[in-house]
Image 1 (cartoon, rainbow, N blue to C red):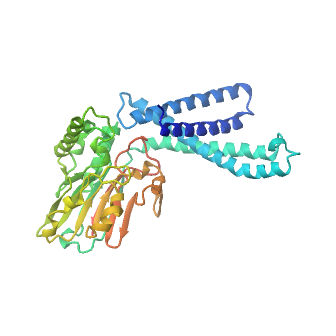
Image 2 (image 1 turned 45 degrees about the vertical axis):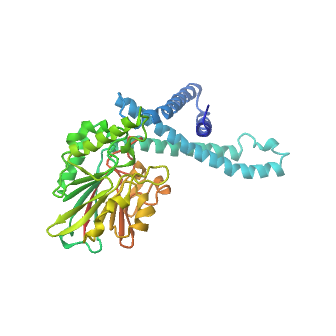
Image 3 (image 1 turned 60 degrees about the vertical axis):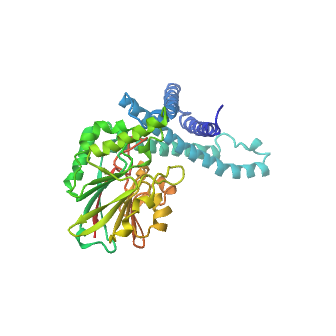
Length: 418
């Protein structure tokens, strides 16, 4: 039986295809016979390929395919569909805006305009053709941009942040922390490029390295080809990590719960193999001379449909018996900060998160940032502050789904405490 969601999605695809076809037809209808036929054939091939990719994407989009070239081909066709989606939005909006005045015109002057359809060559027809041209141009620019974005998938940017924490012990002022997040190694296809990012981290000579979740897409085995590369991450005060929503294998149909559990345990072991201290709803005390701060790491705590494995009460148990004032939290999903941390744990000075990737698409320039993901997550990239509490959301080291980044580059964050 066809699900309601599938029917809705099918209707959505039909609307997109209908309006993109109308736009293309309006633009190419005045070309000569041979050129018209070739252009229409090209459009038909691209459309059928994009529709096939809509099927292939959720089945294989998060995994490494036997053919990497096929994986990127699917992504190209997906971005073509995204471009057509924008065309459809523009054309539908134009229809809505023009139907209303033309309906009024039909009601009050139907004798001159039978059925409300303007005569051939009227201003309405010219305007609609212009809108079709503009819609195809804008949609084409978006698709071309997303194709270009594939070349940015390993273009790591180093972002330097200085944060002043209240009552930070003197020994920890100037502490250099590298944060990375959302590696998603199952999407990688270039170990050399990944290693360059790791070397860029080590070139900064950090005191402490923190990873905020999503090491893999689905399965623990995805990290195996990159174990040696990421084991190069070293810091005097250690490398610490937490799990993200993708690390639990929740998006895989496992033959049994035991198989799923074994996969998770293998992932824990891989963290250890790389020399990373995985924090599972627990904390550690970081010491410099006779002063110390607390590093708290919880399992994934997500809003909405994302699982809540995190247990803050368990993670902070025992801290009440110490003289620690400064506490830093690693929590993969930034929605956790507003939902629980700011309400019940006002003594946590700094929370480090990831998860959003900045949607791997947007505008990210000094003084201004925008991405569609901001309509889902209030805190989605960069630094946020509420009184004496701070949240930093890393844009992600890797990528998933869309094999690229447009305007939202992969990030290595250097945080200096003050």
